[in-house]
Image (cartoon, rainbow, N blue to C red; front, side, top):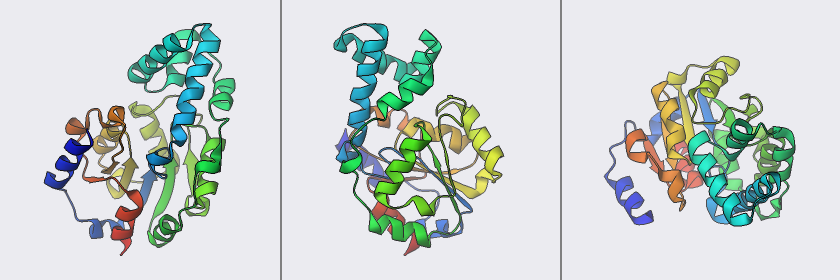
Length: 236
């Protein structure tokens, strides 16, 4: 999969050059596997916690819980949405449970912080995770001060990306023109609503096959496997 992504990356014709993005008015960043590299495997911890929660909540074994968790992710956008829609689950305990992980694996990223400080425009985190978790991750990377706000799954009324509703809610709440905005995301399908609204899209590729689903349909404007390096080129 990685090889095909790399081949596509070099053959893609982008809509604009990175230097042109210095005049962007609003930057919308996903959190997990985007603002930190997927290689640190932080989200693997959450993935295990989600399976454990599903197993305990539904009183099933780990193998069946894994199948259900992945099914809900595909069909509902997140395991959380699937559990709420299919089992009327209270989301608060779930969010506390799955985000109770070891954050020490998240390193500070001075280069990313430097680029964000030089990047003109408003900066927002738009995540399917919970706000307290997102803030801890940003604090570990040492980039919290560069973001105006975090728009999390609670703000979105528990409706996850790529449903179009939270995108419209984000734009309305923070009052920005999507045609003057860029969205950066590791899950390709989550870029489709942003592109439909006129945002420039940036896909951060990883080794997760599920994150590449629908990439050809979405056709992001920019593709990179390293956000830190890509942003450094934008502000250079």
